[in-house]
Image (tube, rainbow, N blue to C red):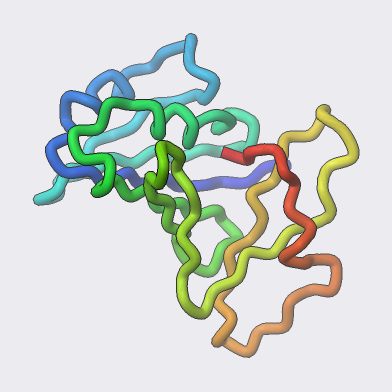
Length: 146
């Protein structure tokens, strides 16, 4: 599966925490590095060209020593999403925050571990677009896609 995704991290006063993530590191489960954004609040962006190289990203971000974890926001946009999804730290984990008038739909889960889990597709529900019959909210692959 070849899907391009963009991830933006917004976190005030987190330059020191994010600095190591702006450098390549082969020891991480995910591949690539963040680029700082020129924002008033701290912001960084990374783009992934495939599903596999991003495995473990959210778990890694959640484990970092954020100065204000309650202010960390992670925005993720897969190429087939209608809009960015929002993840925030709750009880030590980065979880997706449901957005009004959106729904995440899923293909059938992969048949085995050979295939990376899919995060599904975040679609606006107020556009009138018809959801393909093979997609459903309850078909989520329980393995973490990020």
